[in-house]
Length: 192
Length: 429
Image (cartoon, rainbow over all chains, first blue to last red; front, side, top):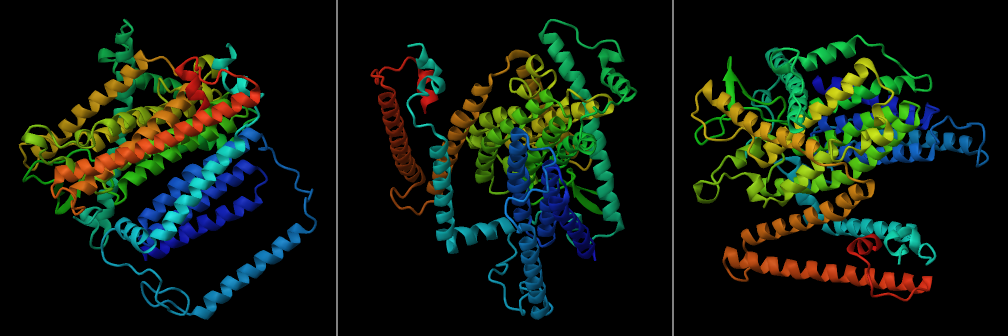
């Protein structure tokens, strides 16, 4: 009973936030709606017993990524309502509408074909056993860590490597390799 | 290890449980407000004394009611919303600042008897409970989440004011918070590593045991080797936007920073949030590094929790004084110094320290079979770790020196080997 009430409230927040992201004209309001959506999803995680995922969702997405969005929006000064009539790609709205409708139908079809779920650990798809079942009653952080550092260690390390490469790439890209700016980015030696 | 969460919520929820939770939330909120009010007074009084003034001394005994008087005054002032402001966000922002501040406070174990044979929980009317509003299983992460959400209040307040100075203040705030959150999280990771749990209640319980020689307490500040504590204190002060890291509201440059356009009760809410965050940060430091309410305790149903609260309060007071002391003593850092400290000092130090702690822990768990005893294994792991760190440092240095030589050559300069001072060397890296 409690689960259903919580689900309905958070689902409303998720959907309302999602609509806000695409319907508000002001980019800052879009970002705020995105936070509402992320929060709703975090609550959905919590009623599934995945507290760690919920908190990581808030820390990483709401706490860091949307802050960066806002940071960029404010710094670039694009926080005024953009002119919505110009279309950089001809027909992009129609294409996006058709695509979204197809995806919606696909998800809906999947749900109807899969039938009702029967108990924890089963996915919505035709009652198959989920790929990762709760191993035991230990906290979800422990289970997640065990899975991540044993079975999926390769994927984990690959992701770490990828992120490192991305960071280095970003540094290299923004770095000015020309010699003429040396005095600017190195004020100490300008006097010499 | 015990199941996290409140003991009385383990089997089903009924009306009484909801009522008890509500009572606890209300008590905690009142406590938090009173503590914040006293903190404002305490800060003004101590800063006054440190600057050879009297501080507030008119309203009430020792000027204790000064904060109340100021609050009343702000209440009755006109509430102005600038014409260019984004009205909805402008009105929302103060609450976004205040709510995370209070939510963090709910994580703090305030009292309880943590001594041997004592029980951290108490029982009233047949219901067992902890002296803490919510014992979240992922407690520390909740703390990080709230500290990263607290930034929204400042960010949106600055933006929605529709004015330049507040915008600059809030952009500074977001950059600062993102920079220091990494160091904060890494020093927290050290605490999690030695405690083996994320729940604040358990972290206190782990620290309640006896440390070396039975005299030195088993506090995390000692167990983690002091460095994470220092990093946390510095990063925490930066997260609070308190001096010497108060570039967000630097009066000399930004008028008042993010709250320049705010007046009346909305300004009071920002003020409240700031001081509530200060009290909460002090309480978090006490909980994570100094054993919270643990300490010598005579025990008993009534005296036990009270003595626990006494320990907690005494430790908290020390840190609140330190925060005020910082404010009265240290001049504001420059922006580049702020970024240098965060990225080039605090993050590498806490990262390296975390690796060392991890290495020691692996060695203590044994089974690497080098020396077949804990000390030998630890030494082995430490030496290997140091060699790897040294190798990494050498590679970075080589890259930096080469890059510099290349750039010098490209610029047509020849004095490659001469570095004017250490600052220049840092800037290139």
